[in-house]
Image (cartoon, rainbow, N blue to C red; front, side):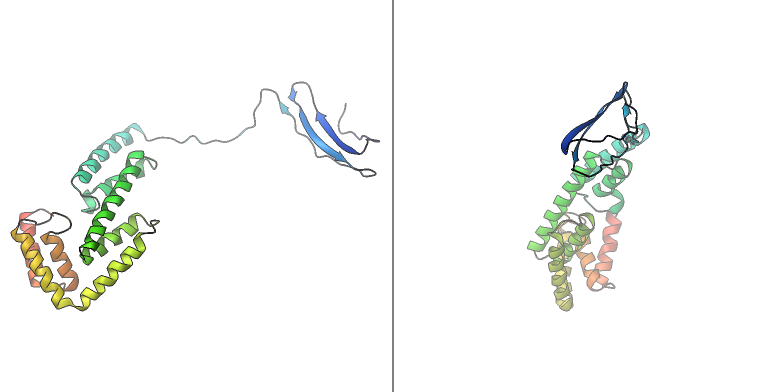
Length: 232
């Protein structure tokens, strides 16, 4: 029939209303009629057969060919840095930096996301070993870096707080602490452990001395000797 229209004398109760027109998709709707009450229905918009609702979709675009080539190059550098345990240092040539550069080109790159988690796990293990060995300066340094990399990890803040508290105690006993660090740094230097392993090398130990006493002659002199032998 024609629309709009008014229908009267419809029996009270539930009814199935069907709106149909040739070439259009029909609409069915259940309505409830109450006795002695008028019911006004909304306007129905029929959809033409063969047409679909217009929606705006954005197809995510992947990296360009040039970006893919850059990603492959960065993957190689990240793999090499990770294999050499250059997880987060030096900043300009470490696995984490290369992963971050990949993610700038491809935010969902599976290699970079997986590698970043591997880096976090490796540094957490290193920090745990440093804390177990009571190397609190190194532990504090590593946990500080981890909190920045993985801010949602609930284990990191209390571990950092513990390490920082221990560092404050060591700083309170500065003279005794420096003497012990001097001995360890000299031993590492004599044994050729200039910058590796990460947990116990002369350069790292001298850096810890400088945190306690920036102008320490022993630490500054040894760092210069290390720089003369190893590019840093």
